[in-house]
Image (cartoon, rainbow over all chains, first blue to last red; front, side):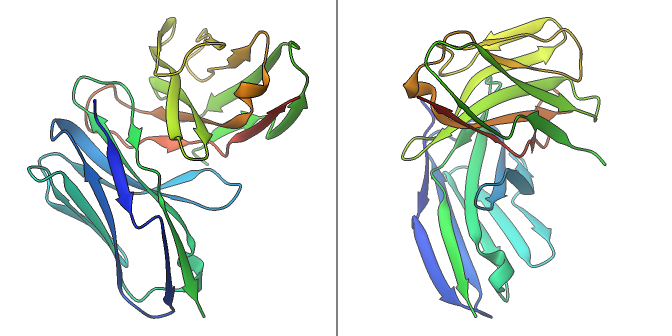
Length: 112
Length: 114
């Protein structure tokens, strides 16, 4: 059974810092991995999708990497801003499954 | 604007009173699904649909029903809600059934069952 873990559960950093969020998964048989952002009381916004054959994806100040063999992904946020404060969720799509398996999320706070 | 919409956004009801949460997408997506989000348990899939008239159970289907009569709509039905179905519900859709798809989520429906 695929399990996804995100550490830490919460992170607070000063504005302007670069930071890394971590995601690990137990089964490397995945189609893809997706990072989402969730604001309080809001839905999930897709940030980046990495296919199983890819190593990384970039969008603006965000860079996500995938090491499928070790079951790890990282989301790098450069030059953090208060508007980046949100919960970040990692989800994998297991091979042969029609669903996403989510981690519990990292609640990120950027302090001005 | 491409989007997934859900209605209602907030709902308070009583045990046993049937309710339906609607979900609609305007992206001509084949695949749609429902998730619930609970503290400490994260997001878990309830049901999914690969196309019109094709639905299947997810990880936590008990107490829920779905239908997919049209491609754009995928309602979630609680025929006899119970307090343990109090949760935040999300509908999602994606274009392809294969591996190369991004899933798009609706804004969520917060349900309280008294």
